[in-house]
Image (tube, rainbow, N blue to C red):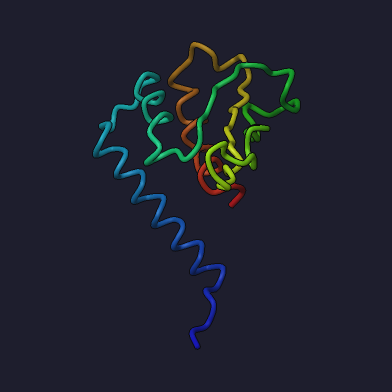
Length: 125
């Protein structure tokens, strides 16, 4: 029986996966990521598993923070489909709550959003 992976092996595997996804994004969208390109990436389910909104509202984040990620679960999940016994999975989306300071400053906003994207796809890692 194979030994379970160590934390170091898991970390290395995740880092490799993230680098591969980053390269795929560059291959598809180019290396010059603008706010418009970021919006396209956020809509691309190959790279971002769930819908994401960017909301500028510092009242929803702790003092001293620039951004936080909130998950929203739709109340439409786990309901039986009308035509079958199929149960819909819970639908979720994410909000990046960003301090207003970053609104209109894409050169500062983009790194924050890109840094937080893995939490949408993989949770707190």
